[in-house]
Image (cartoon, rainbow, N blue to C red; front, side, top):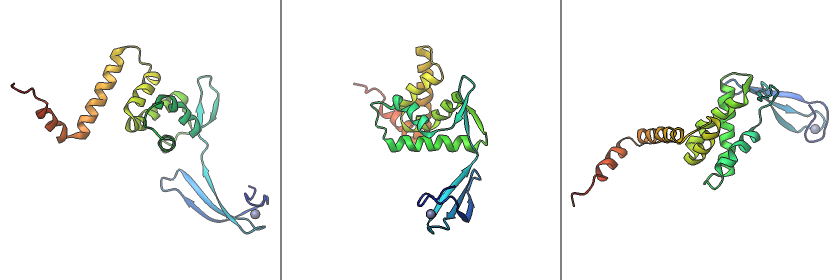
Length: 168
Ligand SMILES: [Zn+2]
C-alpha cells in the first residue's frame, strides 16, 4: 500500500489491533521514506447481491441514498443518516455474513430508521415490505403505537386516566 503522504510504495506495520467485536483489524503503519504514520483497517469484504444476481461491495452511501427520500421534509440530519448507515453496516457485519441480498439490507435499515423517525420509517417500510393496502399501514402503525406505549410504561397508564371524558 502506498504511503498517503509521499506515495512511497512501502510501509511497515508498527501495531495491529483487533476491533472489540472481532470484525476488523486496524494496523498502524509507518512509512520508511517520510517517517509518517497512518492507519489501515482490514475487514472481510461484504457483498450486496442485487436482484439481477450481481454482487457489489456494501456501501454506506447507498444506504443513505436509499433512505434519504423517505426522510424528505423530516427532522433528520446528515449526521443522523451517517449514523444510521453505520449501524446498518455494523449489524450486517456482526451477523458474520460475507454476502447479503439487497432486499435484506432494506429490512436491516428498518430497525434503526424506526428509532430515528416514525414517519420516515412508515414511508420506507411501505416500499420494502410492499404494503398493498391501508390495512398494511394500519397494522404497522398499531405496532409502532404498541411499542411506544411499552416504552413509555407508567406514563402511558397515567395519560389514559387524564384522557377520560369529563362528566360535564
Ligand atoms: Zn511516506
